Length: 388
Ligand code: APR
Ligand code: PHB
Image (cartoon, rainbow, N blue to C red):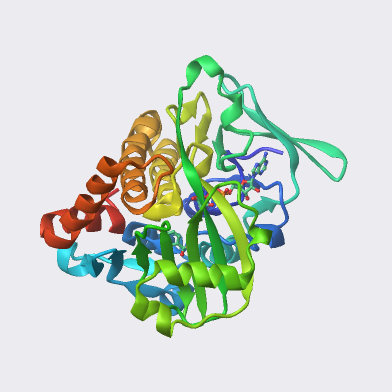
């Protein structure tokens, strides 16, 4: 087989890239290790920046998002001194869209089907080769080995993928921060606790009240990263969540059986080179942020924006500048999101080693946000998404 670009990974990054390239008449093959059903059963983030919304529209899969998604013009921050609102629209004239990543991924698959794009599921042992010469990718399916010759390989295979590992150790630097806690998250068919997301700083630890739609809520609480989700009964979860949310919210919120429950560790990670010869990394394959800033999916989408532009300019105008600049351009935005997510994490969580000084500084960060428009504006600008 031969194509222009082999895309490893059929998550949101790989699918959006395939969609944008196919629309521009560039050939792609997506190789995904899992079944489509499995990919679409993963519960992931739910807040889309304006730029992500624009990109999905441009890719031709914005209709259902606009019908079913819920634009949010602000969010709440809850502290020991009470709750206040950060009004994105007032502060920076923009907003975000609450629409599950799972839904966006489903829309991308539907758009790929409509376009007749090639997505190969259960492609095992995927391996890129000869990235400095004549690139090709091999994989196994149904017991047979296949080879696809190509011009470029896009590594969109997430944090545990194969792509990043083919960049030799001496050619990349990996910069990481592991946080000393995780998030226990549940999904439940209940009315959301509030009209907007509530991010709560509480002496017992962080809590987040989020949602997917009018009858589907997503909640998280800070827990030790090695906590077993099965050891948390639904009752214990709701009780702990209610302790950490403002009293008036806790009193009126609807609870019910969880339909998903899991613990996710929190980390920041950057691979400082997103290109190696003909291989380009994008999304979780190149970087991870803690979920506190709601940036993971959005950052993946902005990588794809830069990468698709570079590839389209290469094929349409024989202009390689965009591809040459890809890694630096993407990383500039990545580092800003890494900082924002680290900052949101640091002002909202209780750290095991937090001393009185750290505690006061955290309180002052939150007071700054409550009292200073300028502080809230800086938060709002980052939360709704910095320009591409
Ligand atoms: N071969 C083929 N496919 C692979 C391989 C491999 N060796 N390793 C992983 N994959 C697939 C995974 O099964 C997954 O479907 O690559 C896909 C990667 O998808 P994601 O992990 O969702 O990563 P990405 O597409 O970059 O999405 C951005 O940002 O913060 C996150 O949760 C957010 O998942 C979202 C991500
Ligand atoms: C979610 O709804 O899953 C969600 C929302 C905001 C975050 C993290 C997760 O910051």
